[in-house]
Amino acid sequence: MADVPAIEVRELTRRFGRFTAVDAVTFEIRRGEIFGFLGANGAGKTTAIRMLTGLLQPTSGDARVDGLDVYTQSDAIKRRIGYMSQRFSLYADLTTRENIAFYAGIYGLGRSDIAKRSRDVIETLELTEVADRRIADLPLGWKQKLAFSVALLHEPSIVFLDEPTGGVDPIARRQFWEHIYGAADRGVTVFVTTHYMDEAEYCDRISIMVNGRIAALGTPTELKARFATDSVDELFVRLARGRP
Amino acid sequence: MISIRDVSKAFGKHQALSDVGLEIERDELFGVIGPDGAGKTTLIRILATLLLPDGGEVRIDGLDVVDDYRALRRILGYMPGRFSLYPDLSVWENLEFFARVFGTTVEEGYEWIRPIFEQLEPFRGRRVGALSGGMKQKLALSCALIHHPSVLLLDEPTTGVDAVSRREFWQNLDAIKSAGVTIFVSTPYMDEARRCDRVALIQEGRILEVDRPDDLVRRFGRPLFAVRADRRLALLDALREHPHVHAAYPFGETVHVVDRRPSADPREVAHYLRERGLTGVEVVPAEVTIEDVFIDRMQS
View (tube, rainbow over the protein chains, first blue to last red):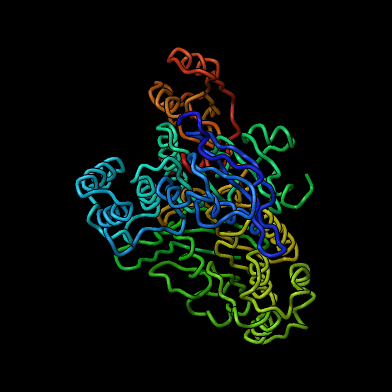
């Protein structure tokens, strides 16, 4: 299993009528990699992610997620992935403990597992004192860390993060990235989408989508060198405007 | 042009602003930079005469935000953080609406907003709800400027827009500033600081620092290195155990290390890390960014 890439995409294409949203995209993500998936609004990011998470069938091409085929094994894929959005998936009126129990239940964890995971998460995040308080009252940075832990409750092999650290203070943001590094160190593959290029600089490799195609793919350092720019932001703007 | 003195504001038990004081010059592009919940929106709403401070005083062009709010509203342009145009009206109808509210006409203000509005002109009949994020933002800016205000207040104008629109937006602000408008803008994005003449760093309702971005960076005053190694978590652990390391934190692909001594040798840090068994070690002096300054100020 360790040799199988976490995500393997070949010539993946999705058309909506005459419009080609994702156009013969090919890439591979290895296990434990932190992969940044970038693109302007309308570049085809969302369509690609919906195919990789088993929510949308491709028009043509191949994609395997954790070794599973997106055409025939989309239900199995959904059980192998985690998802966290910047616009929280947590329930504001439930407590920390209740949110954990709710999501653990959804993912089919047994009662004793739920109790154990819940304790683990609360201890690791040092949330013991606020475990029975409504999520709405927690600072943003804590909510983000909790949302991330909740996305990992069922021990997925791949976790999708949508703008994970937007808006938090610089210290909370770094604590969050350390959690991401920790997950990647344990072999979890982390797939990050973001509008913010400084967030992209934290990824092992990034890809930039423009008009349904991947216009650049590599480590931030490689890409900056290849396009002779000093920031991913500058590179992104040039590619998105079609002037590489 | 804007004088903020000892301004405080609480919502119930939550102290949103504590003794905030700032002086903003005429024609300045002034940025308030801080994370969500730092008090940026509260401060802008007080300047916009939409919220009363509990204590302190704010004057804009000599007018008091509490006593002279009617006169003040005529010279203020305000773009709230939440999109607040009418989605069921067309682009042009929204513009007409805002012109009329301010007792002017689109014709009268058109030349003035033309550089920003131009790209929207072909879509003037389109329902605003059907516009893209970048276009909505341009229209919101046009509506805030249609009455030719002398002060423009912008609350997180670039949140949620992509890098291309973000850049165009800041270019627009430069042009507006050159036309003689004082701009007060808030943002959670540290990298936008360098676009401003001066910035205030704000955290938990308090101002940490106010200065020109270049000077903030220059005054950092400690050696800063960018460090790489094959395993980032092990790298962070090792650095935090180094006796002279003041702070070590992830920074993009690298880890930033602040040394507590007035000067330090990157080779020494590299040697230490290799001794600890780390591989792929690289230590180079790093350029201080506003984010490094912010982290440093938050910790002290």
